[in-house]
Amino acid sequence: MDKRIYTSEMIDTLKKHLNTIDKYITYPKFVFMCGKKRDEKYIESNRGVLEKFFKSKSNDIHVVVSEYLWSDEFSNDIDLLTFEDFLAEISDLIVLFVESFGTSCELGAFAYTDDLFDKKMLVVIDEKYKNDNSFISKGPVTKLEKDGCSVIYAKLDGSGLLASNELRSFVCEKTKSFSSKRELYNKIEPNSDEKRVNIKSFIMEILDLATVLQPISKYDLLDFYKSVKGFSSFSFVKSNGTRFHKEIKYDYILRLLDSFGLIWIDDDTITCDDMKIQSFLFLDKKETRNRERNRLLCRQYRYKGQI
Image 1 (cartoon, rainbow, N blue to C red):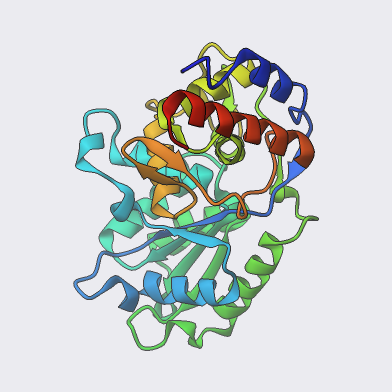
Image 2 (spheres, rainbow, N blue to C red):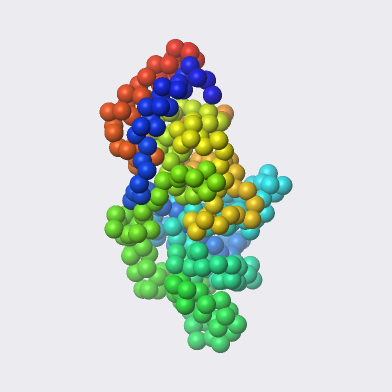
């Protein structure tokens, strides 16, 4: 990190304005969609249909689809189950369409790991199984319902998913709660312990920091984050404080944010739309932020010859 540009004085100034209390954050919201991989186009699948309906209700929802974010380059560092555990952790809602052998396995995995995700899960089952006495209905579905998961029956055969009034009502209520500053799950605690860095809080903090420092290399952004927070290094944990089975890397998070247009990465340089990002890492002192940003741009121009 070039100390001529990212000076110790700038770090010290921003440290004085760090937010240290819980804060309501209503943007962005992630919806993790799990379902059968179909031969037809994604938009024609149940996940695609529901995604379109969600986005018709809110512009601030980003739908997470595991197979579009997974890269074979990850395989030596992380397994697919841990990667999906990471996606579930950062998501505000998990929608699971039980429509294949694979999704039935996912249902069992969610039901019998822990209750961390139960209250933000929606399980959608084909309506023809509504009165079924199968193991799935009496086992994982019953357990998830008892733990607070929502279960809805709808047509999953392509003949009319949104014919379900219950499903449409659920989406409308959920999108309304996403933008509410009274919902407790919108309240996020800033990270203060380098051994227990919550990923959702980290995403909000890194987005906020990027708006002040951009354009900035992804490596300098991480170094600056550690300097401002006073961390020598850090480890990601789930919202209940437990660790992931394998390390969740910084690059996974950047890939996620870049895929949704929350940041743009070009040759390892990060930029973002500061009009879309809420203040979270710092107290909302716009005059301080603007002053430091202007000084930074001048130093970038002076020492790099460009902005």
